[in-house]
Length: 180
Image (tube, helix red, strand yellow):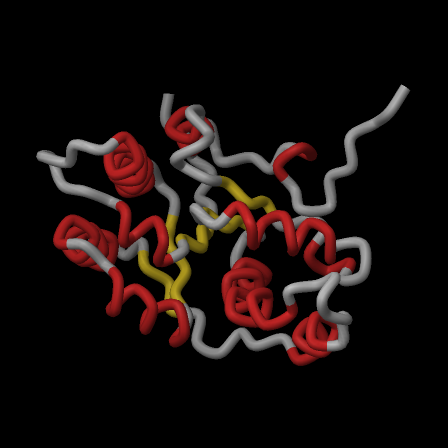
């Protein structure tokens, strides 16, 4: 059953780069392609900012280029413009190295910023960035509700998209498992 709820997804260039065409042989290429194909079929939309679009142009595959054109033709492409969040950048920038990989976090902060403009959903292969932002969510409360999914390591994303891409607590950067 297809969802009628349309979510605004931020898809990292890492997913675009890894998405292979129909002849893709690696599991990661297939999973990224299947995720993107499902996002095209279901009613969800993709959010782009200038920074994210530049990354995509540098790294997209042939499949991704066609996919993006299809998303545009179906009016499922949202150009968010500049979503820069000065307060969030300052919070991350003020973290102390070496405990915090500030430079790496600032390199990927545009994903978080775009997700805050959208529906707080990031799809990325970068589990290290996910871990860093999850740790930082205790200091930057505006990112606690951001959902971060990985189409290579999480096998239920097609069903998740079909059922509305709902934000379960365990998917959020600010999730803290209960201890008994």
